[in-house]
Image (cartoon, rainbow, N blue to C red; front, side):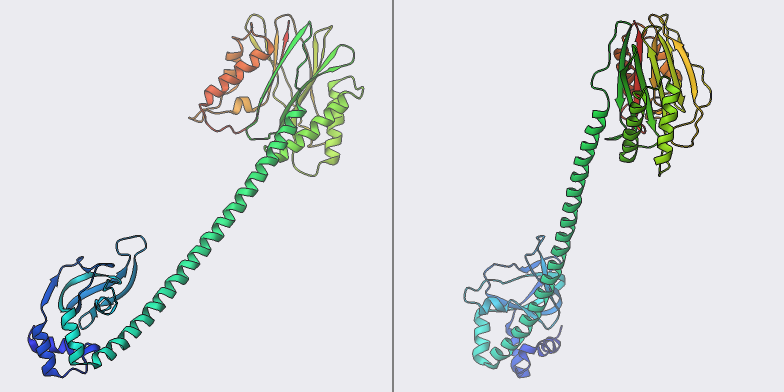
Amino acid sequence: MTKKKEGTVFLNIPLFHEVPKLELYQLINELPLENFKEGDYVFREGEPGNSLYVVMSGQLDVVLAADTSDEMFLRNCGPGEYVGEMSLIMPKGKRTASVRVQKPSRLWVMTRDKFNECLKRWPYLAYAMVEILSERLDSSNESAFNDLVAKNQALQKAYDELKAAQAQLIEKERLERELQVAADIQLSILPDVLPDTEEFGFGARILPARQVGGDFYDVFSLEGDRIGILIGDVADKGVPSALFMARTHAFIMAAAESGLTTAASVMQLVNLHITRLQKSTQFVTVLYGILDLKTRIFSYARAGHEPPLILHADGSVERMAHSAGMALGLWDPITLDERTVTLTSGDTLLLYTDGMTDCRNPQGEPFGLERIKTILSDLSKYNAQKACDTLLETLQSYQQGSKQDDDVTLVSVKAK
């Protein structure tokens, strides 16, 4: 670059507008030039400063907190602009910002002594510098204000999101507490202890798919050396089915203890109550039977539920004959499947919900009825509770941690 072109660059610098051309060319001859590569730092924030730099060619970036997560861009400097003057003005001479080379640059270097010499030679430079510094200060203040507004908005957004997340967490915890209370209430409906007589032993297990479910069972004493045996499955899951289950169980217990002598009459009365009160599409499959301890006859009515299995003492497994039966809560009057079976010594009667057959392994294969029968055939020496425990443990092993889609309930009766 010729001296004339270099002088033209200087003439375009507002700071030197008032300097005569001849004197300006003389000043150019007195200033050394330094070359910088892209990415270089001309100087860093906090360093002592003894010179200012005038851009002859290239581009510079002025930044605060350089190379940190808090880095803030202040301005860009091109040919005809200068940087570093603040360290020559400030009492301690520290750099107030960092200057990084954006494009390869050539810079004139004016030392502190040369700067002081220029001020003495051309006093009006001080006024020009104050004017330029004021403009830069206004620009920096505006930039800082806009940056602060943006950060405040981001902080407010983060606060609002955190507040919403906290509200959701509180609501989730409240729902979990309510679900736990519902689960405790549901478990309280089920019998704590099953009967154990000289003639029969009883067992049961239940595994809800959710915290609360729609399956239920009961084994309870009736007048005249009889035992009521109940299992049911509401056609849904979660809180709605749990509420419907509780109401159905209460109806059945009330009807069973009202003096009705057959399982079918109990089921018909319960269905009448449910259909009269029912205001939803829920229904429930039920098997309710009465076991006579003297005759060993189990008389039951089946309302759309799975037919029971009988494990004989010799290890053979029989599925009870069955005909069509309607679930409770759909229509009135109702069609029931009524049966009787005599349990001889060593027989085990198994009642179960369809969650047992429908549970799947990770490959999507259902547990199925045949697998239940195969496992049950090896349990003829087990008591009623041990048979239920073994079946459920085998089912859980088969699932291998895969999601359980439905509640599972087992009730067994062992003829001693």
